[in-house]
Amino acid sequence: MDTFPATLLALAITAPILVGLILLAGRDLPRSFASGFAFGGFAIPAVLGPWLLILWSNPSTAPQQFQSEGFWGFGFALNGLGAPLLAMTSLVGLAAGIKALTQEVEGRNTYLGLILFMLGGTLGVFGTNHLVGFYFFHEFALIPTFILTLFWGGEGRRPAAMQMAIYLTAGAMASLAGILIAIDASGVDYGAATFESVAHGLQSAKSIPTATGALVLFGLGTLASLFPFHSWAAPGYSAAPTPVSMLHAGALKKFGLYGIILLGLSSLDITGGSLGTWFLWFALANVLLVGLICLAQRDLKQLLSWSSVAHMGPIFLGIWVCGVSGKADGLDAAAFLMVAHGLSCAALFLLANAVRARAGTYRLDELGGLATRTPILAALFIAATMASIGLPGFGNFWGEVGVFLALRAQPLWLQALVASTVVISAVYALRAVASTFFGPASESLEKRFASAPFGDLGWAERFAVFVLLGASLTIGFVPSLVTKSVNPVAAGITTYSQHNAKAPVKAAPAAPAKR
Image (cartoon, rainbow, N blue to C red; front, side):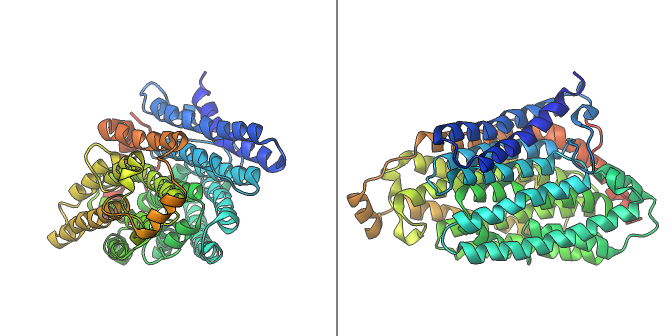
């Protein structure tokens, strides 16, 4: 019984990988069997992920029960930051899987198998505490992303996949170099290099070059679309198949943020000195400059893709202010926003594809008036948009408000710049809603409806969106589902962040015991 949570964790991660492997090996399996089998691969983590989060938040369950023995990083372990991210990923994976199952594509079993591989790898990122395993699972998930975009993507898929490959490989190599240097400096053996052991080892290190923190920050920042290493993200998400956009933008991109928090912030003083100054300005550029780029978009999926990049800005700022102030509230808010953004972002990509399937275009000037023909699609798209811009009741609200409150001790000009993003995001989001669903329908849309009338959102798509928005509402009304797990980690990291203000080489344990 003592290993029960560890068994559930291992099953949640390995089930989609094993099912994906069977589908890839059995490309000629009957459609009905393959569909049912694939659905099981998506559904098992969606049940176990939230269950593990609830178990983790239970004071009677020891953290050691969420760890399994492994070899060179392939053992599974859950910490207080990984638990809500794993639960979020499992729900995004279910919604993406439902979308994939409704699509008609060539090589369907291979397509589903690769998406399951991508899901399993992403779950593994948040379900291991070992630095080698953490990096391995990200690469394991990233390779199917390139293949899926290249062979099943939409317009511009080849240059988009190539750009993603170049940027993400460069970011991965830089971050790997930083990780290996940090492990070496900590004196910990590579086979035993967990986030916590490396952090403790770095406490006794005499000096850690700023370049190590820069490699980790900007390498992982590239993977999380930190400005100016962000330009791969919008073309990649726009060209990728919708399930891939949902999984990558909603969940896999959080790999970079997760690593920046557990390694960079807790151990490498990435918010101190000139490195911290660069971090601040780049985070502000994510918020402001990318927000202005969103205002210029006239394509719905491009808008959502750029918006996903812009919404990384407040998360980066929450991480930065935590390191600068030595207080946990900024990191608490950033972690909460990571979870909430994943849910709302995935829902919007799914719904945008539903618009495209009916109207035949993502162009805003070729849409209009869809609310009269697809009222359920319109209602759910509006709800997802409100979640994305932080309407009270949805999870994003607590994350964004928390970041603003964490900045209250910072200069007024910084607070004003960050607050202005609320207006910018509301303008481009509400304009997209108005252009798509209200006002007169475009001439091309009228002709399309006359020649091939289309219906409202199907039941499978509705269920997928209900899962995502329902989860966002749940954490919006019961934020303790996330904060009970995250708060002890943030408190442990800030204990050392306060010390880092005097001695930048000190480190924090990445996953303190929860209470």
